[in-house]
Image 1 (cartoon, one colour):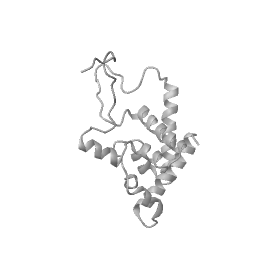
Image 2 (cartoon, helix red, strand yellow; image 1 turned 135 degrees about the vertical axis):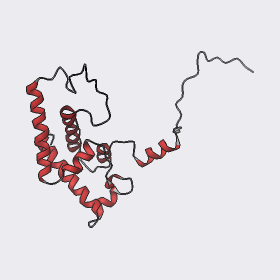
Image 3 (tube, rainbow, N blue to C red; image 1 turned 90 degrees about the horizontal axis):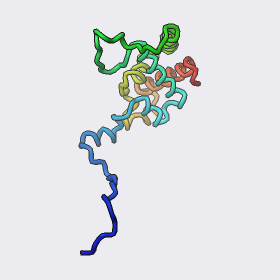
Image 4 (cartoon, rainbow, N blue to C red; image 1 turned 90 degrees about the vertical axis):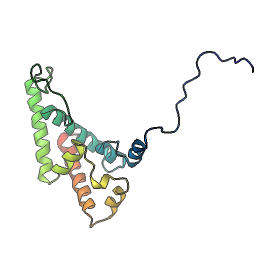
Amino acid sequence: MAFSRKRGRPKNIKPKNDYGTNELRMKKQLGVTTEPIDLCLNKKLITQEEHRAGLRLRWLYTLRFGSPGISAHDPEGSKGHYNKEYDELWLSARHMEYKNALDEINKIGAKRIVVNICIFNQHISFLNKYNYTKAKSCNLNNMRSDYDTFKNGMDVLAQTLGTK
């Protein structure tokens, strides 16, 4: 056996294969691990401006009510979910911006689906890997109606929040 001229540790080569669990690999293939608003952008169901408006709506919701997920709260030392850096005028303006955005999308009846996708990360039927192409093409299906409602709501949201 010849002496190797390479010194030090061998380079850390990242594997090309995904060695995660079977369940995680399946979820990645189905697109379940990606947030629904990002899936909509990746599948070109919404534009970049509508995506930004959806993320802004989530941020406004977080300012108003806190994070929509599970979080701990210290009842003794915390002042709620507000940060000290936010002044009251700025925060009340953001609350009004959130309220106005919800009022505008509620006028066209898209509040439920837009809030569920943008804020609460719920996967709607047209976001499934095999259904989003059907949602664009079929006219009589409930998926088409959900997709149209969501698309109209995101368009109004982008115009209301000024990202369009």
